[in-house]
Image (cartoon, rainbow, N blue to C red; front, side, top):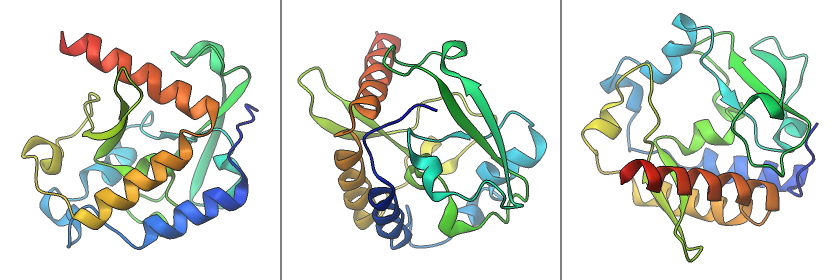
Length: 179
């Protein structure tokens, strides 16, 4: 497995922090029929890549999550990512254990973005999705506490060189797409 510098206790602290906030002050699934959760039920490929080391806080035997180990060579990942990565899918959408959602799920609908000079900002998710997210499409105002907590989380995460490389690469690709 790809071994990142982020420790298990750091991931646990990040999960606890993000457990206290939500993108909006209500269940965002009510405005879209839980589209992001239900997409996993209709699309076998829908899932989340765990960040390096994030697998340490998940139980591989838990019955709600399907695990797949993939070679980093098969995906557009930073050159520093050598080895296997974990891709996980919820088997029970939309009823996955909320407290165990991966970080990229918890950060949604935001993504970390690094400017050319290395400044971290958060941007609305701009990946092609198999569903419409009203929070992204309508740029619904997000809860300030969610934005602050998510920014804090990503500032900690990019201290890990592997995660920094991922965010840096995705940011450069995003800027090239915008041109």
